[in-house]
Image (cartoon, rainbow, N blue to C red; front, side, top):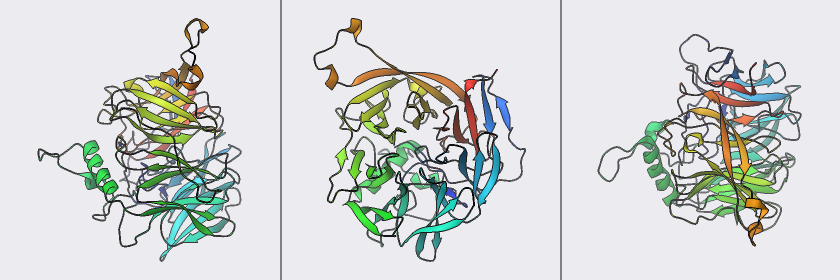
Length: 443
């Protein structure tokens, strides 16, 4: 796994699964010149706007929903709490000020969820985006909430079942109380320090091999009832409820991607349901991960590499039929995270620096990605074509030059509900801010 936790603990840290690579909101630095409010990227011709006012603001991890069901507002984390951005005019307004962690916005109600700690109790709260009224949703003693289902009746989370085993918020074994990249430092077989990416693989493997007992649980938001839906000594993480099916839960086995079977689905409405594996590798060093649901809930998409660091795909698994689609991605266009548009017709990527898994020589861009299927030649079909992987390619269009961005903070692109903008977070001008780029080129 290549992604990087910035982890600067401040008010309303952005929602972070046990090891999901999502940066915490960054504390304001010394006063400096404000980043530009709007500009045309001279390399791409696309308009970029800054949505946040306060240094240290952040949007959510790529697969979390930050938009109201009506698509009119975006919720972001700020050093003071949560704020809303009115997408029609980019008007920014405070929503709530409380020392907590932003989780997500509901897909049914106009509620933004966050979590706070009160003594020894974890408390999930929801704030109404219009009235700003706050209500308590659930209380529990230990663990981490990572997802909410489509009708907002279930919260999903994970917990280490042995309280004596200390883990950090990113799921790693707790060796000290720091939350920065120095924690991943490790030496190679020759005794020399490894690169950050390779050192992190060593630490991930340490955590995986510890075989720490864990449980996935759900909490009924109407009654507060908590029940376990899966238990294992696998490293359970990256929980995501389907955006349309209230009882379909996706999760991952965390660890070095070339070692684990990462992607799984589980039904929470069936007693003793068995997890269903989404992807089975067919070659050594094949990796798959950074999975997400399409907006209609019909497909699971993920980053696939065959093998790692050499050949890149955006791969799709159709849940109802098991059919598979693979779109080939060029090295420079490989991205830490990909995403899909609301209508499912486009992809986006947030790029990556040269030290990441693709080692791309020119990868520090945000991309709009146009998928293109490869048809049968002359309309002649193979006898078993229906059962084979449907191939295609990605034609990548550059949107934003990210050369000034430090990829230890991952941009985490997501489409606005109208499909006209990409929202991302960046430190390209120093402090962390939330930005958006318009998909149509500027006049």
